[in-house]
Length: 101
Image (tube, rainbow, N blue to C red):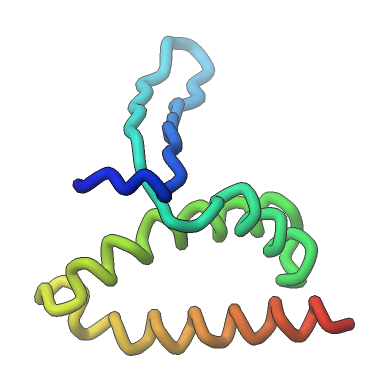
């Protein structure tokens, strides 16, 4: 992955929560042209979802979206891409409409 000086850089850490033992964990770094914290905050305020769902949605979209755009012709994404674009446009319109209120 090329590092663009304009990109925001993040470290994503996932920890498994278990009752009786040490859980597994993984961490990775990601660059994104969008500020993920701003994306999440906008979704919290304007999506109509509760805070936890808005957070999960914002982070997951900023992880999946660039991968799909970069690989849009890959067989794994080709059929899903039109639906994803439609979903993203609907989400952006929802957030914009809420911003105007």
